[in-house]
Amino acid sequence: MKIHEYQAKQILAEFGVPVPKGRVARTPEEAKEIAEELGGKVVVKAQIHAGGRGKGGGVKLATSPAEAEHAARAIIGMQLVTHQTGPEGQKVKAVVVEEQMAIERELYLAVVIDNVAGRPAIMASAAGGMEIEEVAATSPEQIHRVTVDPAAGFQPFLARELAYAVGLDGDSVRLAVQLMGALYKAFIANDASLAEINPLVVTNDGRLLALDAKFNFDDNALYRHPEVVALRDLDEENPLEVEAQSMGINNYIKLEGNIGCVVNGAGLAMATMDSIKFAGGEPANFLDIGTVNDPQRVVGAFKVIKSDPAVKAILINIFGGMARVDVIAEGVIAAFKQMDVGMPVVVRLEGTNLEQGAKMLAESGLPVIRATDLGSAAREAVQAAGGLS
Ligand code: GDP
Ligand code: MN
Image (tube, rainbow, N blue to C red; front, side):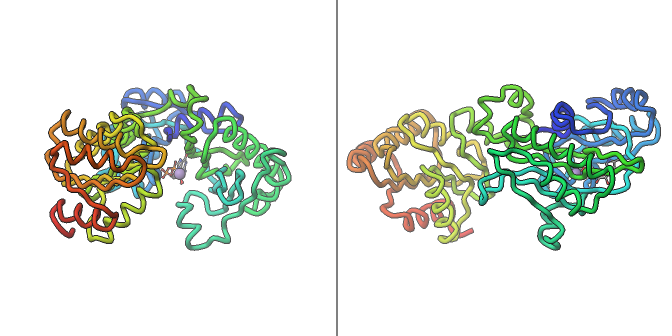
């Protein structure tokens, strides 16, 4: 789960990471009031879940409350396009109005889970304010990282190592160590998977502040953070994915093709997408239906897939292990009863209770196309969706 910059900064502030003074505004008038409180010289920043807002025109400097109001009027309601939003962009509902900082240096700082080390890692770079993916691609030597032993916790010497590596000296080293400790604490306490400050700025008067902030949270730990869940903004998420979650399907990801996939298991779901591509088609989604023993979950998957207007055919590929093929068959039959499926459905079933499931489908008289292996299932689906893409 993601949150907005202003929410991330509230969390950072609670844990002792210095952030610029400011607040969120939902109207240009509110933006003007905040700018007045802050003395007029402010920055107005679009609040959307994507990064790259600066380049996309979503960050504007203002030198008076009137200018701040004007900037907010331009930004609120705009369809902001950045490299992370896709070409359709994201509608801006709010801005942050913050005091302007006199910036001497822009650094990068983040805590992430290092999946290889199986530990949190702190990353820092002197190339702040830029896309870190770009820095990683063009000059990886500019990214410094240390991993933290979770049993020992945050160690100041690791932070000092990073502070020196990005070229800090004197008192700013002490400030950086303090700030990294606070960031690490915020990361751990909230079960985050990413806590990123880009840029972390050094001001002309020697302060260190988080000018931008981003948090991603581990969805599997959200149950123990109701206060984080309360920060969720569904308008920023894909509506089909939100609908899928409301039906207990947590692993649905919308893609660009026209073949809807219902698969159990993430690995099989990926193999199914590969097979569709190999057969010359494009999957409309990734969907791991999980270990299903409730036919209604299959009906839910049909509903979600059908609400994507791009879908022209459905491919059901199930390997019944813990899940049972007869339950899936029951779900497919229920889906046809409960809705107008209105498109070709290719079914490939394998595993536990296959005979029973196959018999149920055969006796149902439904117009499903049965396939006996993954390759032919994919070819049937591509053909049913209108041939090669
Ligand atoms: P992003 O583009 O979505 O990552 O948005 P950021 O919050 O990182 O802002 C982008 C850039 O705007 C920063 O890297 C800064 O260069 C600039 N910027 C943001 N706030 C200020 C500010 O208070 N003063 C100055 N001078 N520049 C700022
Ligand atoms: Mn940024």
